[in-house]
Image (cartoon, rainbow, N blue to C red; front, side, top):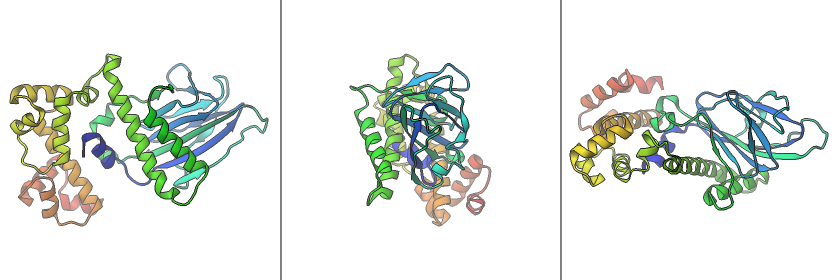
Length: 311
């Protein structure tokens, strides 16, 4: 897998949840903070305002995508002056109590202008949070534009159709579309960082062909006997310049990241399978079960067997 695909596959846990929600003006809705999750809002019809707790109101129109990678609380409303209702779309929200719910909500019955929003959440495993995600801002706003983001618009349209009119196969289509939506949002955000002139860390790394080539090599084959020289060859650079560039952008040396990713992968394997420890060790590049256990305990603070039992 390439690094972005791998990060999405590893960080997600459980089933993503989504809802197709309709409001009639005047309305205001608070969305509670949900730690350990990521959320999104997509305006499908009408318009509304994002009322962040720490900034000025932001107008949202049809096709606008709002992504909250850290589950931050926020409020949507038909106008900045509308009072929010009780928190919604949190863990106990009835619209999200089923994996793929579709609901219509009329707050006033006054028949005001209609706003339709596609909202949803992804559950994340805090113990497997990748630094790529930790560096994201609290809110990512991707404004609609007729000549931009065609793949994202297609994914939104397909997901909205499945939720509004469930049919045979919807239960299989929706989770795939939700993962695709998440991938497109992250791909777009990372690809646009250099144009904004503030590319640092992982945003810069994923737009650096040499570092990306090394990262993809690690994620494609974490068990391979990588050395700095071998990774530098994948990147098309000599050893010293590669090591400096990798550490500057990723925040740790190449072999440090390799070990961290191996231990993250091992933790996932220990949770998700009953494979013998020797097999898990081999899958992350350790011929010796003892050496694997030592590295795992150094990273996770507990032995692999104990970690599996607790999980």
